[in-house]
Length: 276
Image 1 (cartoon, helix red, strand yellow):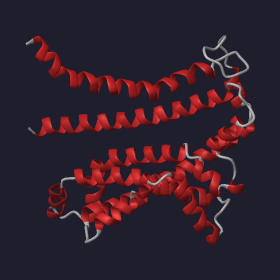
Image 2 (image 1 turned 90 degrees about the vertical axis):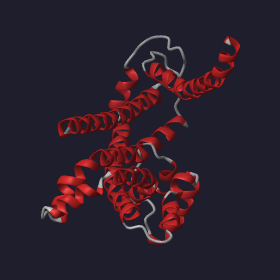
Image 3 (image 1 turned 120 degrees about the vertical axis):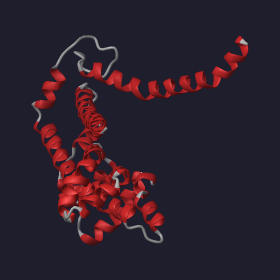
Image 4 (image 1 turned 180 degrees about the vertical axis):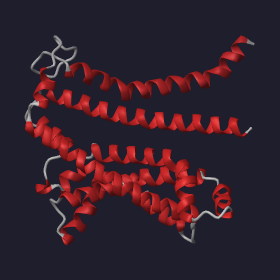
């Protein structure tokens, strides 16, 4: 009996072992970068010979790093507005107004998520040349929006599918208009999806480099591009400090999104208990 139970539990054990190995493969390099960013050494080395904040001071005292960070932040905010707006409208059509061939349209919208970024960048470059968008701030924003759209569409489709149409119909029955119903009935249900879509759009733009290399031109140097160029000439831990800050921004963004999601679940559970 014991041997039989062991054999039955073996697949689960192998699955867990595989999951832990993949997790370690993805996370361990990050755990190395963070200590290196506090190194007192002059080169990238692990374990660090001592502890120092000099590389963070170098980052904050260097106008080139700050300008690149501000530019990336401005681009990411513009991408959030465009990607969430366009993604929401596309999700509304997919869920509420399906038509023959909607599956093909949805597949095309997911293309930037499937096709390698360099292929998308080449396609965007060929179009931008005709419209003189190479090297413009607007061109970078539009290109990043293309890459962020699949994430926002997926999240907003899930959000619209979660909306109970009977609630909206009840609102209409009581005499409410479309705008009032959307603001007071639909929007509160969609708010977590909007927030999650905004977070994913921000992150998708925040760490994008391939598209900027192809179509950035004289629009300025974004933070990932500055990091890429810096690594070609320097090997000191400043790059580890910048990487740690990027990681911190991503972690805060995803933690905030998870907090909003859990808060929404708790609120719906509390509302359900109150209704009973």
